[in-house]
Image (cartoon, rainbow, N blue to C red; front, side, top):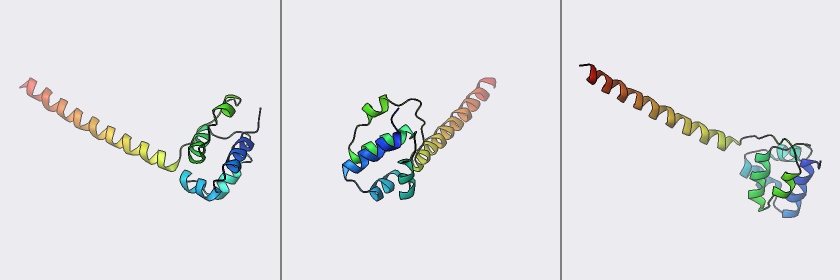
Length: 107
């Protein structure tokens, strides 16, 4: 199995995109990006995010890799939370309407 951090680093270095740009766009610190280069297993989300930034397709490299873990960016977590809150708000409104209609039927 290839060292995933090395796969990531090689693609980043070949792209010419600065680490600071990748860090800013992913929401990670520069040191975190550098630390990922030393990992034997890199989260698949990181490959996808970085691939998008540097215009690199990691699919060939990912096929060789087993049991990739996933990690969410701060932006993805915030967006997920926003949608959850909207869903729960709609669910509450729906339940209130159901209760109101049920009370009408009982009268």
